[in-house]
Figure 1 (spheres, rainbow, N blue to C red):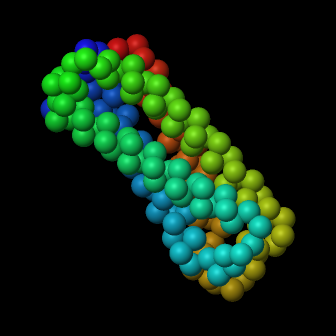
Figure 2: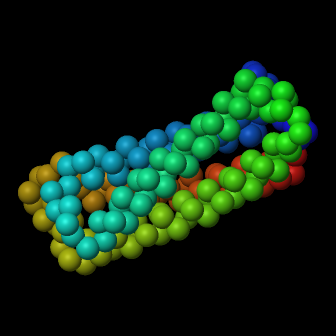
Figure 3: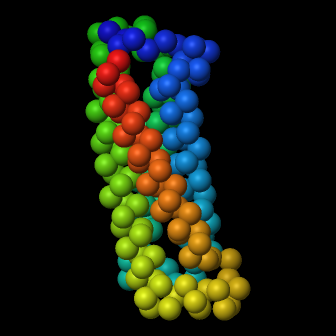
Length: 160
């Protein structure tokens, strides 16, 4: 059961297709900004650095899963494997991924607050380092927006 999802160009023009494109772009922005911060971060042994790693892995995994579903629906594979209700499966997965992104974005926000309280952000700005706390802020904002769009996407798929 395909759950009323069209494939091909029709999928690109549909609400689920547009939402997936937005999700992928936002998740790439998350991984890009926070990944750049992590790559140039000199103090890799500080407290709460694990939250940055968890955020990067979770966002990357979420982006890969979103991309896989995008490709499945785009090429019409969901119409060839009819014994699965792809819309309901996608809804459940996207709601879980949204929850994951909300949690890891909150953890990253907690990390940013910690770094600001300990004056790490000021030290980075004064030293003109490549790592700046603004990159974490961008990752947090993109993470929460990606989570919200994944939640909307899950609801849209649930109603299909």
